[in-house]
Length: 158
Ligand SMILES: [Zn+2]
Image 1 (cartoon, rainbow, N blue to C red):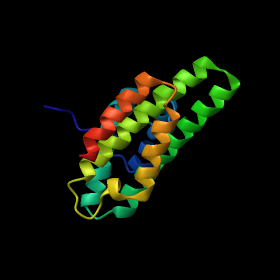
Image 2 (cartoon, rainbow, N blue to C red; image 1 turned 180 degrees about the vertical axis):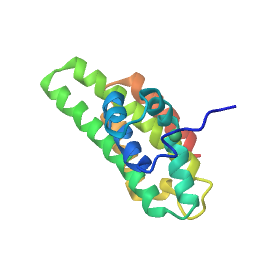
Image 3 (cartoon, helix red, strand yellow; image 1 turned 180 degrees about the horizontal axis):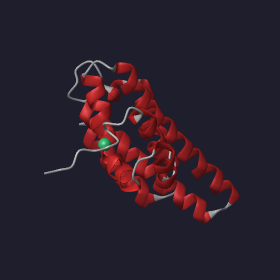
Image 4 (spheres, helix red, strand yellow; image 1 turned 30 degrees about the vertical axis):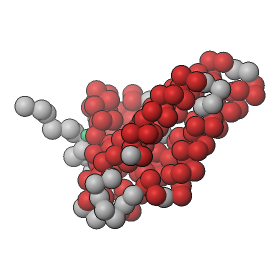
């Protein structure tokens, strides 16, 4: 039987979730909130369902806040790709691409879950169209990453 997640039940689970998606090291989160590092790692998989659940429960503000955190993170990663590109820092650029890809995946996962909710359709939202355009443009010099993201985007757009 799966063990209950100590972070989902934590009174500050929202803050912990935000710390995870903004890339705070697991050990720092574990230390700050007095939870296990493994629990933080496991809880990462609970974030997308949590956003969907908050939305279903009518906690639209919490769902929106989490979602916009993920969007901000994605845009920050894209900004880093561009900066590293100009500074010719290959390692930074590759790390930022990975980060953008992971974040895009999280965003898509959240979106996929929210699609069943009739009142919330991110695909029709102008912000989503903008994010999608920016992501694909930013990734254009990196065909592999672009292809992977474009493929994932196609799946949710259908
Ligand atoms: Zn959890």
